[in-house]
Amino acid sequence: MAGLGYAAILSAFINVLQLTVPLYMLQVHDRVLNSRSMDTLAMLSILAGGALILYGLLEFIRSQAFQVMGGRLVRKLNGPVLAASIRASAREGTSKAAQSLRDLAELRSFLTGHAVSAPLEAAWSPIFLVVLFLLHPGFGIVGVVSILILVISNIALDISTRSLLTEANKANVEAIGNVAGQVRHAEVIESMGMLPALSARWRLAQLSALELLETANRRGKVIATVTRTIRYGMQLFVLALGCILAIRQEISSGAMIASTIVMGRLLMPFDSVVENGRQWVMASGAWKRVRELIATEGADRQTMPTTVCNGDLVVDKLIYAAAGQDVPIIKGVSFSLSPGEVLGVIGPSAAGKSTLARLLVGIVKPTAGGVYLDGNSVYLWERESFGQLVGYLPQSVSLLDGTIRDNIARMDAGDPRAVIEAARIADVHEMIGRLPLGYDTPVGDARLTLSGGQRQRVALARCLYGHPRLIVLDEPNANLDATGEAALIRAIRAAKADGAIVVMIAHRPAIMEVADKLLVLENGRVSQFGPRTDIVSPMNPKRQAPNPSPAIAQGGDRR
Image (tube, rainbow, N blue to C red):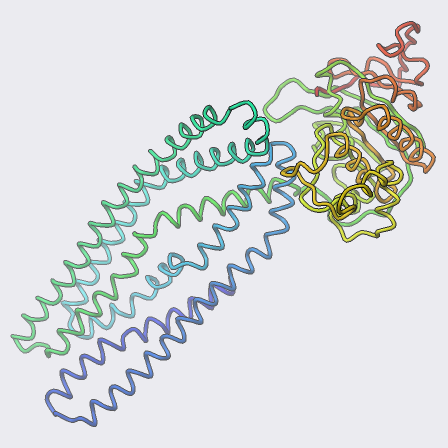
């Protein structure tokens, strides 16, 4: 707000200095031509030149003020917007983050463009209106009528185009978001010839947005054209009126010329507001989305870092229903684990195992109940300090754009010894050493440097980096061969010996041999929970089913 006030003050001086040309012409016509004094002309020219230089300097300073405001806005919102968009993307897909960052760039572009200054120019238009009244009351009346016409035109433009532009922008955002999500699956699209079908979908979505945009632009062009025609017509009318008044000797010929120039300058900002209406609507929509994103995502998270702890993991009557869904996915799950315990979670597809994993690491907010590590809610926990305690290997393995070292160190500078230690625990150190660039090998979703199994083992090293106290593994052996699975089991045993709580979700029975306890989920509820040797499951079909502990509330999740 301070920067905007500064720009408004500069705009006042800039508008006053824009009177230089009409006042110069007035004085030249009325003084120099009548007196034929070259000294007067020279002095007026020096004064006018100095005023114009000052005008240019202030105009540059104002543009820099807007540039600084745009930069400050981006620096202030970059972190919160990125954090909020990542949290939203964890639930709604990657397009949310891309759109939020585009909105932020659009806001900065708007603040550094010409459209933002038009209202400030219009706000100081009374300066020119006063000058017109001083030249002759008739000029002032024409100026007032012209401003009213242009204001009505601007209101008509806003009413006729705002809803269309908002809908068009929303449709365009959705279309771009869909494409952004699909591009991540380029291999599937290219290999199975899906591009023509996707192109058709893209064209259909774009046509809907383009039709709305073209309708809004057409209306805007009509109103803008009429407005500009009115502005030129009013300038001609003032010139004709000035001519009549000059003939009647009510004003001088210099006043006639000056009034025409002042009239044009009076109406120009209003014309610019009409012409740049679309940019204001787009910027308004971008700001609204950014503000809502920051307000809704992470507003209930704690900001104070929490001390590293070694307490129990307690899941208490956990219920989770996805947004817009009436039937919960997780239905009252309760259990607890102590440091050094390994829990295996099994169950049929769509039982809620992956959703439970996301709840355990605080990605999504529970509908009721909660997950607590050493008495602290994992969802409310300040994320950076929580991340130092947690290792998470999701079902869909992804490596970020960077080197293998960057990924294992979780994109931080990282201690090379800790990186190598995590790689050794995951039994991937030798594999990395055989790569052409070793730990400096670039990886990411867009690169095919590593196989699926190699990516999973690097992701496991990232999960184990820093000796986390809570480790959640979702199908960690999905892409591993027998050697990789044996290395995974050794890594889990090492984490257990280190006092970590390990929760792993898997279908293959070999990895469950390392579990101390098993939890069986069925249709979002806990059907069995207890020591591994006591649980009846597809992995242990011949055992008798024990009675589930009455302390365990029923619950579950869907994958």
